[in-house]
Image 1: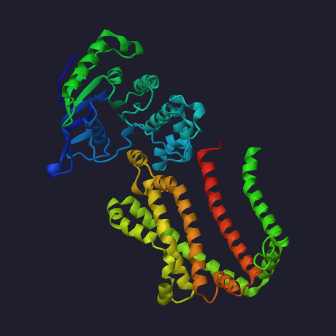
Image 2: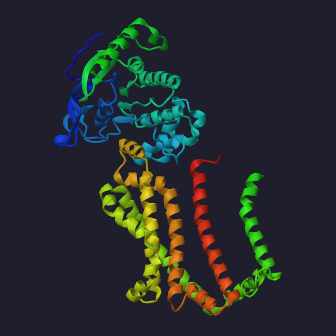
Image 3: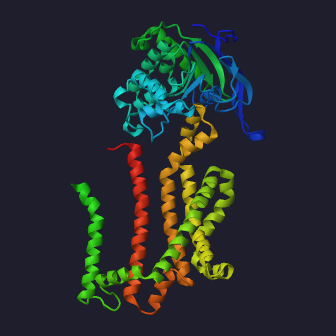
Length: 264
Length: 253
């Protein structure tokens, strides 16, 4: 287990440089994030974990270019983030946010449709991804005919169809039951290992945070900041059995105490 | 089987009411001078529809309704959408809106006559005034029915502002837009007829009112029946469109 800051280098896919976010101004100003800096290597799987209110979702939205930072900057794939960059960055949310009037495969095609990709090309790119997330026989179903887990699978496929180099995931499995969540995590790891993309994954689940990550970034609250950066020593590919191992337990315990100490 | 029964039930009800009407009048449960038999009313209606003067009045009323609806539908929805989207505008105008909504507009008919006369224009303006607020409320509800998450997700795929309005807002708001237009149509028809009955040289409302004063009950009921059938038909058409769209959108189940 190694801790501490790692300075940004050439191989970094994501460089977060002294990000701060303040809501409001004057007396009522709320500091959501203060001086947040970290770097993510290409192909690295980073989880952001922390108590509610630590600004981890805000941080992810800043990385995604959906919310502007008050101070500092984010550089992804060599370009400063100034707004959504769908060709580089794919974003997933806690809710799948599928268009209810489109079928699963049409939802996967939607980002391509926005970029005026011809219909035939869209279909040939979307269908293999529907297969990849195991929804072959549900391709032409509407979102309200799918379970919560299936809807998030569609959302994964919809992210991947843009062939992003970075996946930003904001508690994507938090609304699912525990078994589904663990299974979705394993499947995500398989997809990630195949595609070799870079992932930043926000969660409040410690087990999920360790199980998925190369590096766990632990955040504290009031104001939101990074309190520790932990490299997970478990080998790849990860298996469910590792969750019961002693090393896993020690790590989980360590993070639990880190968060418990900063919780107000 | 039960599905068919449920679909047929309204028709059966209408048929039963028609039979009751006919029987009540024929067997004098109701005074035939006040309530002429349905068959007589239908015969009078058939005659009226051949009559050039009556068809002229019908045409005037229908064009007043069409013009008023063509104005108030888009206008009310646009204003409602703006108020639904802008919190500042909503805070500024919502109290006035609710105040104006609760005022019975018909008591201002004399004022409308002084201001706009008793012709085509006055009918249109009054109907637009009557229907406007209800359509605005539907527009507000429609704008607010769009989940913020859908918009955020679309932004993350690089959707432009125009794409967000056309490909997220519009389809998401469609059910409430159609509902608002339906309400708007009902209020527009009411507004035109009210204004015609209150003071007008032409139009179905004027004609029906005159028959009432002259105690021409078969003609009166024929006119009323025609209005009812036409309004219900329009309403059902709009509802049918929405039901059809819904079944296409959500898949058949």
